[in-house]
Image (tube, rainbow, N blue to C red; front, side):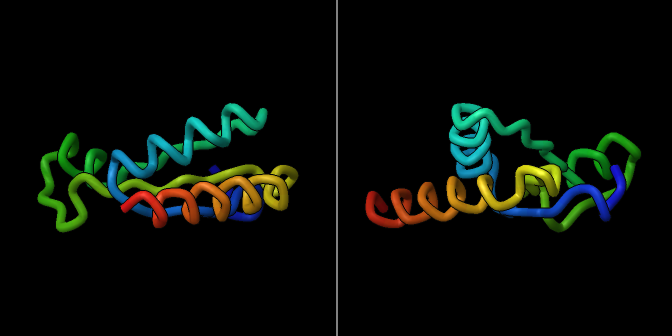
Length: 80
């Protein structure tokens, strides 16, 4: 994954990332979920960010994705 083609739009725990991912998919955006903690665990290393994931989208979908992410974050803050 080239960092020039993709941009990180969200970082959080598994539950919140799953919500963001579902909303992006509903909007027709294909997100990529990056889990460094799981990758490190599988490689035999310890991780301080276990359970936290990143959501990345292609730069062509970035503007639309940010609208979805910001709206979803706003909704999640109201319900918590």
